[in-house]
Image (cartoon, rainbow, N blue to C red; front, top):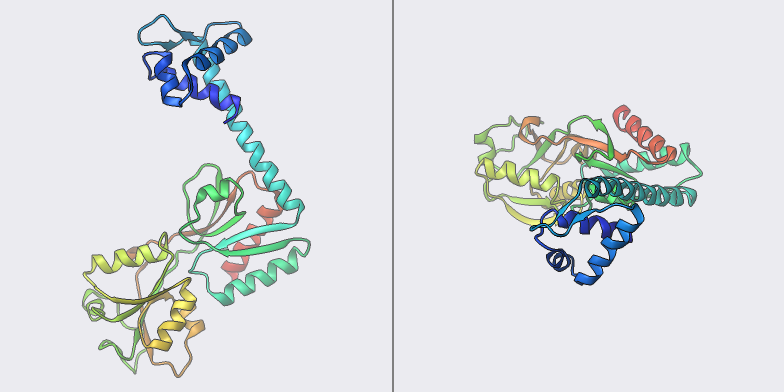
Length: 303
């Protein structure tokens, strides 16, 4: 913790404490150390910051002003550190792009090839946007671009993507299967035929699989989950091999299904899943990162 962080914490805790001893206890500092830092601040600014003689203690008007401005300095330092991390990585020519499980393998390969062709001076690192990654990983520079769920964070810019419509694979082993049809109508009754069917899941617990679990639970469906795989593409292929069911996207299913495969698709209405997706990057990102993000958006929407 740097000096600015310490001062902010001390002044903030003055507002909710009866004494400097209590402030020190909350911050695991000694009381003399807290008093010393406050005295040094008051000498530096030439004005009293804390009403020590009051019970409980409180900030003076000057103390309130100093606290607010120290927080501005703190925020600027954080943004500077993020920008420096961003610039260092850009100078090294490395961009990290996290992609959720709803983007299939052929699409990722297509995106990777096209961005390499357009930005040959950059090196791209494509990783899975798993449940372990959050908006803070974008803020702190761990990843540069995320393709997947939208995050509500004022420091991030989101390019909306079309809402993904999920598809349920109906294997020939399911009573609902119709060899004369490509698609099966979505309904509560049709979903109920999936009870106790073998199911291949996706271990993207923060996004796709959580939505799927809610859908099945809301419709009273219990499936026999026999396996979980890292993304929807792999789950779809495994479902085909094991004659099981899984929930994926129509695009992934069509890329995975062969004419000889005996499967139907049940399209799940968008309102039942609300899988709003976007391409997200920090507002303070370098121009290269912004250009790559918008190029990916064009590739996805035009594909």
